[in-house]
Length: 346
Image (cartoon, rainbow, N blue to C red; front, side, top):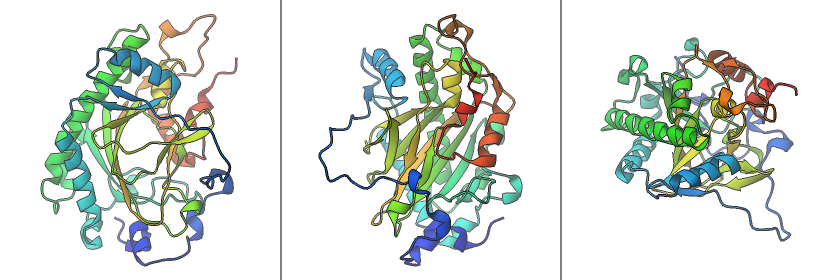
């Protein structure tokens, strides 16, 4: 089990370090561009879809096709639960280091082991993200063990369980809308994904001494089917749209929907997974909570045959999800999408 507090970004930030350590400095091409002094056209705004509206399905269709990411409101998840989830995460990261380290990731269990950590990749040469996290294995219930979750924050474990259930229901609702929008049976994407493997990852981005040189999370697309994310009021999440990085403003009662790679494969590229990143700032810590809805590692993901034709040939090779995940963790995002390695040359 990891025991070195020095390995944590938060511990490093709290020493008052004035210069960014070399292992966190991003290559120039991956860094956030400095603000432009010349006039620029107004950037587009990420869509906001009201799921309680009769026009919700059409709005989801447009957002999936044009963006691959969008906020939902009117989703039925109580704002009190969203606040409780954010509060639980913040209470954990504000706790003494010795308490947090009791729940540290076990490196012997491989990349993305459950628990409190700071790096997920197996590649030791990769540039590090300015981020700490706590990853919870929540579904299926056979892999859920609340004893691996903090016991010193009142109500923490119950909040995770309630939040897990709400996010599963919302993800499945959105996947049914997405399937229907493509004239597939409503359960098509759910059934293709199979038994859901859900992780809930709380990310904590400490103030950074040189934020223009670092990233909280490098540019990437998510590996699974769909991701649901909430954030605090600080801001720092960007999505890539038509070659431009678009800030995603915090929406306290909203939930950000991010389409992931397996949905792009299933939909034959009709709906693209969203490339996104987390930036950092010098003044305020930021917290976000991402819930990942993924297939099992043994699941084979294939393009829906209904979406393949002479005019729209199959774009991606079939893939075993576990192989896909292993390739990502062995080399990291490298500022691009892992899914591009599956492209079939036309």
